[in-house]
Image: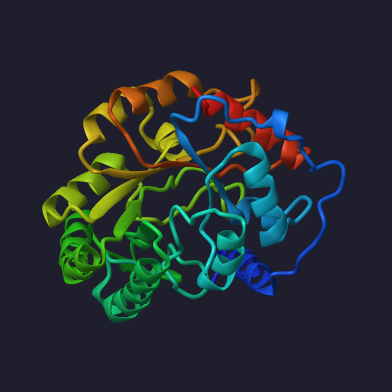
Length: 314
């Protein structure tokens, strides 16, 4: 296994372990916001904070602190956090807009594109769908998986795009009826394969790196509970033309993620994506789901998060 793959796994495992700890800390003056400082004013875009981004680096917020920040900014959700964190979310009156898929290690490596992993992926994802149904949470994340026949070994041979798509459709059809029965949406994420500078800025080897490819897989499944996680950062890198892509993919979008590009950092003037018109396009399309802030902080995380939330509050 390559050092890069090990670092990807270690980073995700660190996030899960830290979330499980659930240590309760008191917010310092830096993160305490008065009620009149809420970033959300319009509230037409439902916004969420992606837990791992603020947990694995920087100030390393625990789940309680992340929930307090979310509430103070006017966000309605903290997401990509497991069931062990959900009592804390509920204590703060928050939802988990999209839950992890329950896979150990780096959850995006072993996916629906490889029948070798179908049993494990379907079992873990099914358990999370059932847990979300009980908790009243709307969706679970899913992945195509890496294109290698052994997801951890780039020398093991490649699954072709056609074969990978067929395998995804077959695997997703096995779980679609459960998702429909439970009223929980499984959202398959598109990830970029170009950025190899950091284990969470890009994912070389991921099969679903073209947004049209992922959307077509979802359309072939034909279930109202199998959708696409449209990550604006990843789409910008791999496809660009984000607003047109939103229009083209509107029938299958189930969740949205943000980040600045290049660098997967703050949504500020150092990056190229113009977020306000993208958010207005979502409103025009009648999008009612959540927008998850999924950038990696490079400076004061609260200041960057407040800026991002305000920017998307069109």
